[in-house]
Length: 431
Image 1 (tube, rainbow, N blue to C red):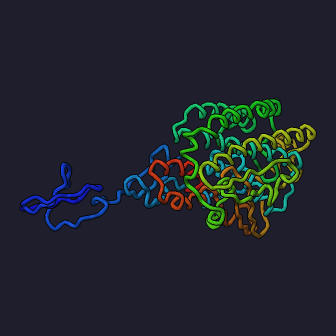
Image 2 (image 1 turned 45 degrees about the vertical axis):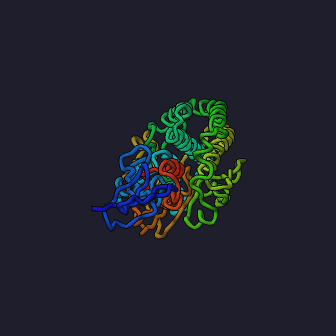
Image 3 (image 1 turned 30 degrees about the horizontal axis):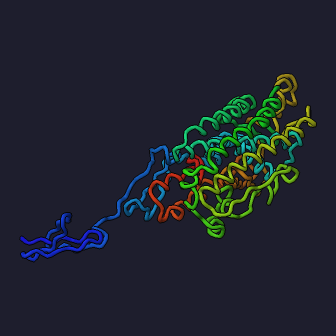
C-alpha cells in the first residue's frame, strides 16, 4: 500500500520512483486519504489544575485548554468548599453571625468582623465609641498586613522564590501573637460585637505593636530589594495577566486588582468609615494592570498600613481608659459581676441571650476596604433579632471572574502566576 509523508518545517519533500512523497531523513507516516493539517495534526489538550493543588490556593479547579503550551481558554470550577454561610446567618442573632465571618476570608478575620458589626450598627442606628473606632482601625490594618504577607510569601513560592516566604511569615507570626493576645485566637477571632468589641486590648499590646511598626519596614525593604528589580521576577510578572482600567471596572474588580490597572478607588478614601478620612496615608495606584503592578500595589499598601497603625496607636494613648462599648444595656451585655449581683443587669443579660438584639424593619449595606477588595454585607430585617436575609459581596469571588480573560494566550506556567496575583480565598468564594 502506498503512503505519503507530510512536510515538516521548511524542508522540501522529494518524490521517489514509486510516487510516494518523502522527507529525508525525518517523516511522519500517515494512512492514505488522511487530511493533512498545517499544525502537524496537533489537537488541543485539556488539563485539570486542582481542585487539590497547592498552586490553586484552595479547592479551586481550573480546566485549561492548551494549544501546545499556549492557553486557549481557562474555565474555573468552584463550589467544592460550599458552606452555606449566608443561609446559616438567617437563623442566628446578629452577634452569632460574627463567627461565620471568621471563616469566609480566613486570612483577615478581624476585618470581616468589623464589617459585619458596621453593617448591623447601620441597620440599628448605633454610634460606637471613639476608642472602639480606633481599635477597629487597628484590627483592619493588622488584617491587611497579615493578608498581604501571606499573599506575597506564597506567590513568591509559586514563582520559585522561597527565602522571602520565611522573612514574611516571621513577621506574620509577630502579628498573630498580638492578635491571639487580644482575641484568644490566631485565626477565628470573633473580635467585634454589635455596638463594640468582645474585649479591650491587653497590657503590653500597644508596646508590642509599636515595636512591630518600627521594625517591619526593614523586612519590606529587604523584600523590595529581592523582588522589585530581580530579572527573573520581572520576567515572570511584567506584561503578564494584563487587564486595562476600563475592563477592570466592567468586571467590578476592587482592591489591589483594580488599583493596579490605574483606577484610583479605595473605600477608605471614597466612602470613608471609622474616621479613615482623618488619617494620613496614600493609596498606591498602578499603571499597566499586570502581575508586577499588583505586587507593587500590595507591597506599598503594607507600608501605608504601617503608617496608619502608628497614627492609631498615638490616638489610642490619648483615649486610655475610655469605654469600648456603647452604654446601652439592650445592645451590650452587662459585666458579668453585675449580672451576678444586680437584678436589673441580670434581666438585661437574660433578654439579650435568649431574645437577641432586635433590629428595626429595613435593610442596610455596608462596604469596607478589605485586603482583597471591597467586602460588603447586606442585611434585610423584619424587625426580629435575626436577619431575614444576609448577603455577602465577596471580593475574591468577583475578582476571580476575570481569570479567563487574564489567561488568554499566555503560557501554562503563567496561569499559576496569574491565579496567585488575584489573591483569592476559597472560603469567601464558596460561601
